[in-house]
Image: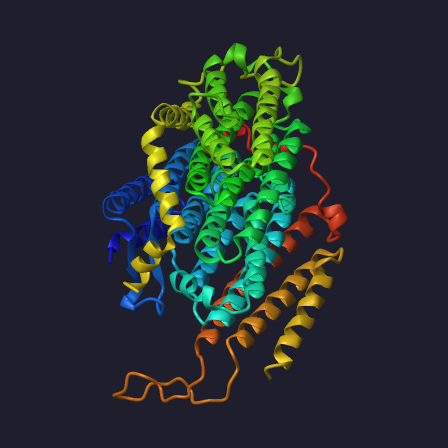
Length: 503
Length: 133
């Protein structure tokens, strides 16, 4: 029993409530927003210390023993995800101070941001599959409103697609939960892991696994279920795009990793082969989509899809090395992707547009911003010594050691294509000459630091870029933690024993 | 009941899918409502329907008197209904707002690719004016 486990859920709730109380005051809301994220980060760090030192931490809510009550479980994977989401929450809260306009603030931007984080954290912590559905819905309703907040034409269009496909995916998820319950009579994930191997009808279990794959696949934006993502993620303000692009799809990936390592391991030959195919197509279609677009955030949105493929690939290998690569990839990708979104926001503030064809001259006038972009873009493409290199190296190594040469070759090729579209952004927005017309007056005159307060957006980007370099230079400790997480996933008996007691 | 409910759930699900694929946004949302209800029915019937004692624990004992009915599916469905209600209320509000803003409920027209994507962003100068006022 560890009481700290409720904090990542309770702190955002308290923060959201406080922010609602000060709805009228933008200044108060911003302070509360940032402070709440900072407190969350501290609480996650304390919990991380416990999990790192003493192994998996469990809390039975209301002291109802598992499998009857709702269990919160923190293993290493949950902790890593919680940690990165808390860091990103803080970064986004700071960035939002400048990026989010007063109207959105008064219509509840900060409370919603924290409720979103509450849903995300709850999903990472819960040990109960029905409870996971509930946290997904908490996260979804907050994301629906964040996406539509502001009511511009584009946002409404994006939100409609996003809302309908996500409602549908949640219903499929719920149906899968119903089938699981009908087969085993339990909803606790550890108990399910014990009971599922006893189910005689293996075919039905595999069918449920596929239902979960479709449902989480829609949320994680895997092939062929990703089309909603590039159609909606580029519509809201950048801070919202960034938190969506960084975190939300990764919650889907987390759920996939959880169910395909803990629950559905009966027919690995079938399910994980499908995962490999899906991973390959996700990588390729995503990166090709990115290559054909000329809108900054749309390119980044397609890259989210492509990168999800790598994570699914690691999961599909189902070895310690593969899972370690997948987890490391998630962490690296959240950093790099969020940062690229944040940079696109700064570029838009300076140039007045996201259309690459109407941009140019950023390198000449803002070399520092260009350097920040290069760090994140190279990390995404996988240049040593940045974080992406180690992520890709681990996955490639895992693929080669299994003899999966085709998918490994695809992964390397997609890395090259990623570099191609990053170069495209670099060549047009940063390197090309300043376009002759349509450039706002303040371009070239507004400094990154100083008058105009643009630094509020630049400092978070600098912090994340710093983290990317740090993760790259000192990859070994983090890789070891990821390996611990992967080993815990591959040996579910530890997880089961932590939740259910000795068997 | 054991056979009727699953068949009913399947039929409602199929109808829901048909409605989901219609062109009008309102019909699509009705499709989601139908699917939501059919999933709830499925959840209910998968929890096993039986005519046994109510699961009430008499004073002084720790277990209800066996054989007792399974109360959990009802708790699950109640949760799912409440969540579904909230989400659908939001979806309807969004549809209404889109109709007001875009003037149509035909999804072919509604979901045409937007040309200018930066309209959601308040420009730098506007933003500062908003701040100061």
